[in-house]
Amino acid sequence: MAAWLAVLTLGATSAYAGSVREQQAQAAWRKQDECARAAFVKFPDYVPESNAKRAAATLKCERDNHLPERAPVNESPVRTIPDDEAN
Image (cartoon, rainbow, N blue to C red; front, top):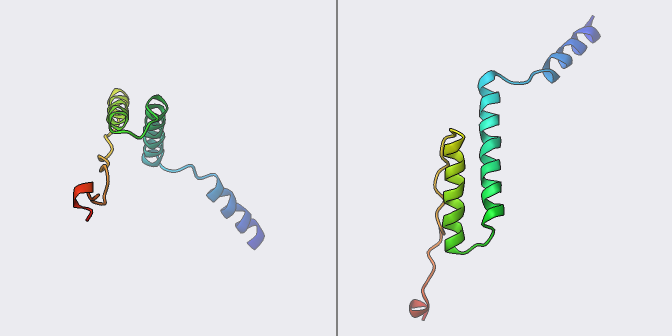
């Protein structure tokens, strides 16, 4: 009896696919990742112009697919010291 209960319990947990909201969230995150990946392929350089174009392309893709916008990314969380202030 206990073995049968264990098999039934394991079968039920492995068949769990998540609620509808979980599946919708996963689909939205997956599509957001695809948007970011496509924008990076289109603008791969890490220069300010490419960063701005990449952010705009990602935002456009998210809007076209009716996805929530991601939070903006700061250019640098650490303050860089200009050359004239270094000494």
